[in-house]
Amino acid sequence: MTTRLRQGFTLIELLVVIAIIAVLIGLLVPAVQKVREAASRMQCSNNFKQWGLAMHGFHDAEGKLPYTAKTSARQTFIPLLLPYIEQSGVVQGFDRNVGNFYLPPFIVQNSTTGLFCTPLKLFYCPSDRIGALWTDDTYWRARSNYLVSWGNVTVGGTTATDLGVFSNAGASPRQNKFSDITDGLSNTLLMGEIIVAKSDKNASWDGRGDAYNDDMASPGSMFMTINPPNSPVPDAVWCFNNGDPAMPCVAAAGTNGQLAARSRHSGGVNALLGDGSVRFFTNSIQAATWRNLGSRADGQTTLNY
Image 1 (cartoon, rainbow, N blue to C red):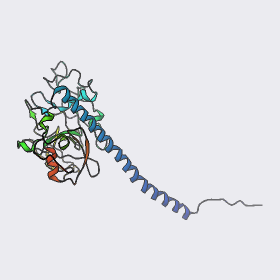
Image 2 (image 1 turned 180 degrees about the vertical axis):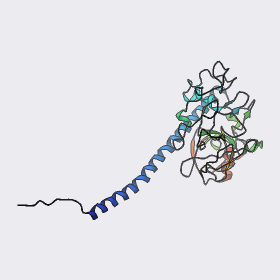
Image 3 (image 1 turned 90 degrees about the horizontal axis):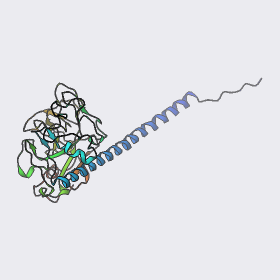
Image 4 (image 1 turned 135 degrees about the vertical axis):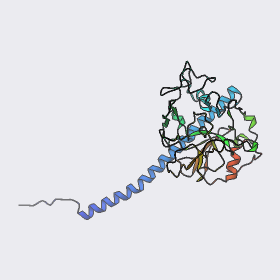
């Protein structure tokens, strides 16, 4: 009687195969992550390009740029630009004289079904919290990673040479024109990205990315160039300090408020310049150069970055 031998791997051979597979997975996962992040960074850049087209479209139609925030009617730049990013339906019925926290017929404040509860894709960097939506008071609102440039000053700063294109907020905010950007459109920031708050419900309101909110006591719709991108210096904002090293903060409000450009990208942030171009600015950019980019009229017309 012939006995057939069973073919198979020995224990040692199996262990070797498993070890090889583990090594291959170890090599593959970082590569996939790099490809995914590269795609996210590219999509983030494309989002900025759309915001740039919206800025130029608004300027062509109105003869000026939008304001950062208008406190008398509780508005920011976002509802003004929505028609220029093909979102006219979102602002249908919006009344600039009343504000975005009210619903037609403008008697009751916005709630969970208000005009600006929709988390539009263009609001978010794919590397951060897509769909972040503030839901902890009577008027819900979408957050955004993309804010306008206030310049090299705090909320209460008034030094003329440090003011950004969008250092204009209040009851009757000034709206700058492209002609007011005397440093040159390619040398001046219009928008930059930030990391939105990690939580949309907490006992201590976190204003980071609260771009629909006109509240000037804490930067919600603008960022500053006082500190370089992804600076280890804590932001001075109304915040809930969650211990994330990528977004350090100290609770502050009022004229000393400041918020640095930040991102989940490796090594820097995307930002929109006045000419509509989008650049990736590394964390190692010279602090003076970054501050110059934040100013619209400091006389620095030739910048190396």
